[in-house]
Image 1 (cartoon, rainbow, N blue to C red):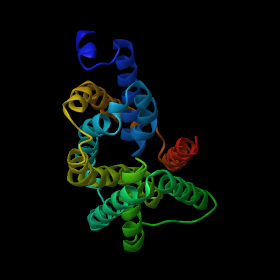
Image 2: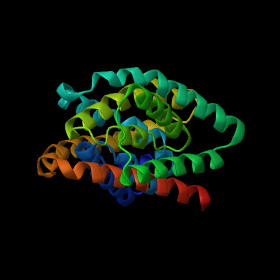
Image 3: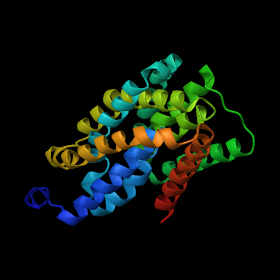
Length: 246
């Protein structure tokens, strides 16, 4: 109670935030994406300081843990998409700085939704060099302007072995988060001491969700992973559009 009051959040709401983050982390540990989608909307309502600073600071234990747990299944070609993520992040930041993020966010949401629809209707996306570069740029761009960096690369790997999908997205997100996202948030002044304090409450939930994910993976048939990934990607696009058009 006292600790929650110190960081300016009601104790009950802090518990709610921790539970939601736990569920989101368990989902991402199971299928490769999901934490941001499930946690961001509610956390932003509880306290705007949770998004993006505190939530972003709490994610590294999850993505690093996932990458290490399934390191044998990482697609090593993913590293060639890292420069593309940097380019996308810079482009997104520059465009938002000059044009504002509302119109850009709508475009991102529509693009992700269109990619999901194309996948459902028969488009068979493979992680070729071209597709990785496109998805890497899209991940950096979408993550910067809309906070939904996962879907572009998740769609690229949707037909891969679930272990490859989880491990590869995890290592890609680890590099992007540590090398690009967190430094940019610090430079922009979005992440300060209060965000660090809030993150300290979320990190135990992230670790717990990662642990729960080890058990849910075993109960999730591989053929169900792709539909779950597409649903999460579509939901993230709809959420972004709804937020922008509200």
